[in-house]
Image (tube, rainbow, N blue to C red; front, side, top):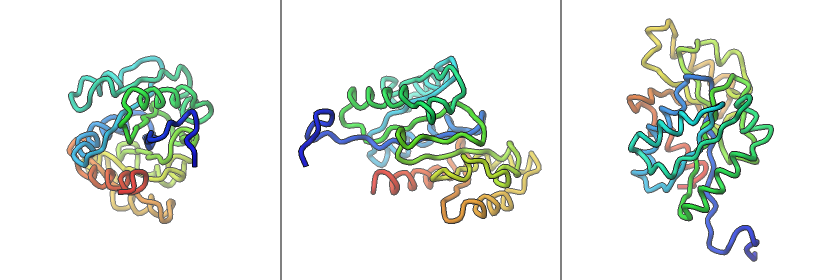
Length: 212
């Protein structure tokens, strides 16, 4: 097949993975934990963050020392966070395209949503595959509420497992209920700040969108 004018011969289009979830669930912490793991596996990556009216998450990643600051782009949603990842993802698509143009070898772009609610989902016009992050401090009833984010994501991450005994959450039951509502789709329990479960999340990304 001949290459289109928009996609010159030899250009590899980066896989795009969304990371969404409620405010404070640990989306940015998960990205911070994933970057060195993916780098160690030879993955050339970049990140697009979303915030309402700031670039706080992007600046946090740029200051982290984990990734070239030029490889982090910021989108200011200016409205409900899910608007720019679902209803009209134009700004995020453009940010991803710009990163691909600036770094021709990039093979994976992570799109972090602004903090939202359990109804948050990603448009498949924007991402190829997406993760939804919840945390035990939000309550062990989250899986039972069957929000679209929890049900439709390709991978559900239950973060902050270390907090379970401190917030009265029975983690094995929460995990069992999450698996019950999701059928065969994967669920991983993590403590992103300490690295627990992060390699398993990276495994899923590698297999699902990088095919290795």
